[in-house]
Length: 403
Ligand code: FNR
Ligand code: LAC
Image (cartoon, rainbow, N blue to C red; front, top):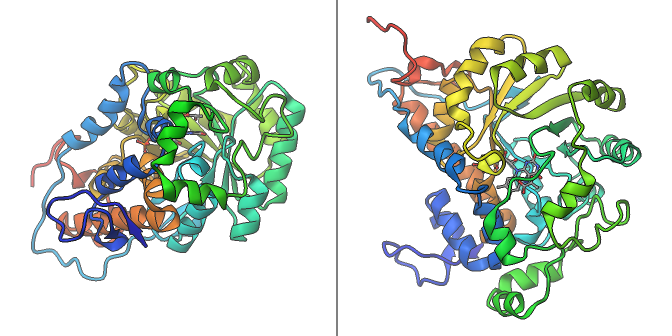
């Protein structure tokens, strides 16, 4: 698999770089920036409003210093762990990312295949391009389904039923997007699904032949789970307008019971960023939470996910599985989040750029980069097993280390 490359230090012609020569997530982002039409690439990168929270997610992770330990036996390392009681080969899951199938044709199917081959969970967004059924049929493996609660409860019950019928192994209920935080670039780019064929967009797409080719092979070009079921979904000109009319702004803790009635399986609440809410999540009977600010795409000015994580783990860590997302760009970041108590990390943009850069090979490369970085980081911090990583792995958040 080849992709467009960018680095001056690589001995490859700029146009073709083998995937295995891609060294880091930043490489995948760079390649995606050239291969994916502008409106869809910007959609992935963006945070809401001033992008303060987006920046803090990344910056606060980098501020946490890892503790270098030497002369400890680090042979035979083991990156396996569990999520919701299931064994997984890395402490990572692919986060729900809307419109992945517009980064590259069949993007959701390809990312799901890459995740399954790596032995980690894939989460399909409600707002995916490939439908639940298409992903299930193409992969033949269970995945997690992410749910947005809309006003039409009949449709939501039907959607949950479809996830059940497809053999989904967990429901991820996202609770931090009942109204949409504005990402300025989406307004400026006129982001629409399916892509609007105005002159500017067409000219931009014409410079992306690999993308066009992948889209021609794609099973779907609009919201696969919603088109044909929800009115107006065949042609969405503004996500903000659409969410404002469809999403249930009255959603409250009382509705979790209703969801559990429809879905007796494992339930994950995604978008918890407050200790008080984490305690309510435990009370609600959910199996897990994702400490998340939606990758800095919703409440701008909210604290970084990583700054909130330890407080939540201290408050509820023994009562509920605590997952984490926001700002993971390296294996070192994963180590930091695990050290502060995350059971696993969900990864959003890092793999979405991979899909844009090269479909399944790009997604697989993103997972591989993160896994290898985590493996080396663990070794240099003196850990053999992911499940043993604890707060002793970082310099901050140590209360009293005397020896
Ligand atoms: C998202 N996210 C998201 N979350 C969700 O529950 N449903 C969704 O459909 C989407 N869609 C979506 C699209 C794009 C382009 C991005 C970047 C993110 C949020 C996502 O699941 C996750 O919380 C963040 O991406 C985590 O932050 P990082 O890893 O991107 O920094
Ligand atoms: C987003 C939504 C759709 O972040 O989750 O764009």
